[in-house]
Image (cartoon, rainbow over all chains, first blue to last red; front, side):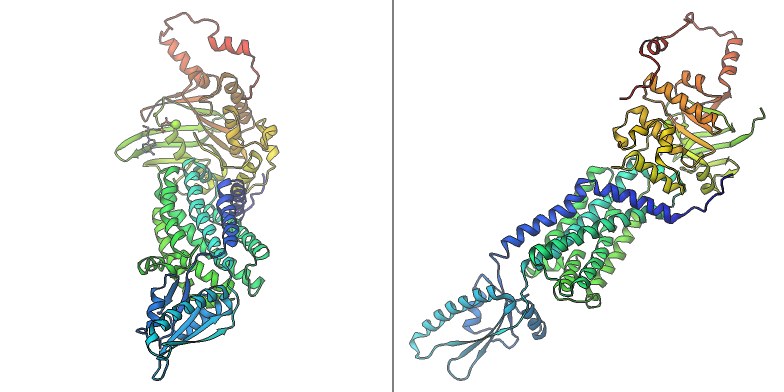
Amino acid sequence: MNPQKKYSNFNATMAIARASFRSIIRSPSAVVFSLAFPLIFIVVFANIGGSGVTVDVGVAKTTDTLSPVYRALKGAKVVHLITDQSADDMAKSLAKGNIDAIIDVQKNNAMPPYTLHVQYTEASQQKGGILKSLLQSIFFQINSRGNTIPQPVAEIKETTVKGREYKYIDFILPGMLGFSLLSSGVFGTAFVFLSLRLTLVIKRFFATPVKKYSIVLGEALARLVFSLLGALFIIMVGHYAFGFTLIHGVVTVINMLVLAALGLIIFMGFGFAISGIAKNESAVPPISNIITMPQFLLSGTFFATTAFPNWLQAISKVLPLTYLNDAMRKVAFEGAGLNEVTHQLLILGVWFILIYAVAVKTFKWE
Amino acid sequence: MAEKPIITVKNLVKNYGDFSAIKGISFEVYEGEIFGLLGPNGAGKTTTLEIIETLRDKTSGEITVDGFNIETDADDIKQVIGVQLQSAGYYPNLNLSELIKLFCGLYGINKSPMEMLEKVALTDKARAKYKDLSGGQKQRFSIATTLINNPRIIFLDEPTTGLDPQARRNLWDLIREIRDAGTTVVITTHYMDEAEELCDRVAFVDGGHIIGIDTPNHFIDELVASGFERKKQVKLANLEDVFINMTGKEWREG
Ligand SMILES: Nc1ncnc2c1ncn2[C@@H]1O[C@H](COP(=O)(O)OP(=O)(O)O)[C@@H](O)[C@H]1O
Ligand SMILES: [Mg+2]
């Protein structure tokens, strides 16, 4: 009678993707978590700027750490001394404004007994200014303590390196993108698959010729498109309204979107796993929070992880969002290509394998 | 009329762990009939249906559907059947028209949503969400989704449970129309009046066994011939007739 067209798995996948995309954009929570929250945070933090912060000071390897100057700096609360970077890394960080100054305290055989070399950076003039006034007060104290001897104890020699200004928006926006991807990937995926399973939508699908992989792919595709459009929107608002730095323009945006896609795919893995573990919808938020909260707080979303104590840094160094944020910032601000963030991509790749191994084990169709 | 079996079930057994839900049942469904599986809750109606629909695995037995074996040709079977699950939901946040489009994609078939909604008199609800429909409308919409792929057989699992008398009658009319258009209908119910009214043949299922298969009239005649009499003299009408007579037969929304 009617000539049977060959069944197309592609068309079935696309039908699910279209349906899912429609459903996502009509779901208030998806829009709030993926767009509204990140934008609100960006607006709030872009306006507060990075006030009440610490000054990151790199310490050159040649520094005399026994000198009174060094000990005074160590005792100052606003100063965060960085001693574990190579001279090379430090110089790079300085130019980017990731650290605010580099000091090198040297013991002299002549008078004055100590010379403090300070390198500031144009990339962080405000914090450089804070350090400068702090150093002046330290020197005033040290030198007046040495009043009994005629010569001052130490002198300062200053230079300033050139660099690009690293604004707080350059830090906060990639973190917000990461947050948006994390919540959409984990919460969104977990909720959708759990509710499709519990309401027997998936069972009804199975009464049609559709393949299982079409269901997963269609859902993933819809979420990917939604999240990438969201990311693009956040980047555009950040760039045009708050001066977010995009070094190579469109190329940088594309690189960021590629990273966003990779990140989302990994976070969806968590979502798949949770949808299998959760018995009902009210079990999703607690389990999801266990996954997202630590990453939200410890992966450098709001603050650089360098401000954390070592044991917290150790935790943050295993979380996937840390590496996504890291790669995003390198790509956006430093203009790194994807080939220059292979270390981050490699660790994300390990997470991909781990989480999908778990998801395949826990995922349930009915 | 030569009765041609379109579904054949032989010695079907289904165990859930230690519990034996279906204990070896056999029956045939003929092409073009409305076949009723009747039985109380827990009798095994849904289990039997979903095994035939290839949605659950059987423990043992043999089943063919329109010439296809459920073990080897599940994909072919899915192409020729339409399925209404007892309590299925639909994709959230989509309207009826979009849901039909989704199913068209899943079946790989091009149909206009309006054409499908017209068959079940829901064109004015094309932009409504499934969750906002009345009970009867929900069931009619479910039936519309079973018809998308022009199936040879549709399976309806308790489509009238929980509906008011008007909605029930309205659904019976729809189901008869579907049969008259040439589609075989397999329906489950625990309402005997419904089966008597609607089904061409019925099978009684109880505790995992089939305890009788025949036409409703034949069952009744047999019982009467055995000397059975209702304790109370049957009145010429019952309360439902009164209700329908007073409220009118037409379909109510809401
Ligand atoms: N997935 C399942 N696991 C265990 N027992 C089940 C399952 N599904 C149904 N049963 C049991 O099998 C019996 C038949 O169930 P079902 O086919 O749903 O009956 P009906 O549709 O006639 O009400 C019931 O006792 C029910 O509790
Ligand atoms: Mg049932």
